[in-house]
Image 1 (tube, rainbow, N blue to C red):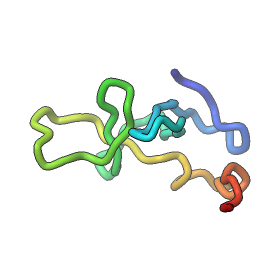
Image 2 (image 1 turned 30 degrees about the vertical axis):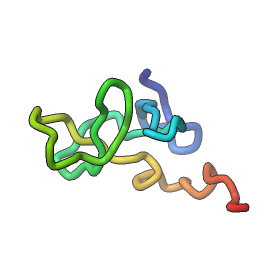
Image 3 (image 1 turned 135 degrees about the vertical axis):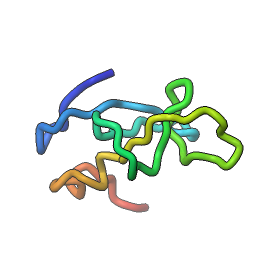
Amino acid sequence: MADHCRTCNAPILWAVTEKGKRMPLDAEPTPGGNLIVVDGIARVPRIDDEVPFLQYLSHFTTCPQASQHRKPRK
């Protein structure tokens, strides 16, 4: 689902992590991305991935206001 970041207004895509948490990704794929999306699940690429997937960056790494969205650690 395409959306925009609440604080920097950049276009983002929402994905779900392998642990079931929602994660914002930069909307544009990038060759330097550290995540792929497989069946709607965002994860780190594995050695056994045969099909070339588009690579994305977590929007937390590029958002200038990312700290505003992080929950405090317990």
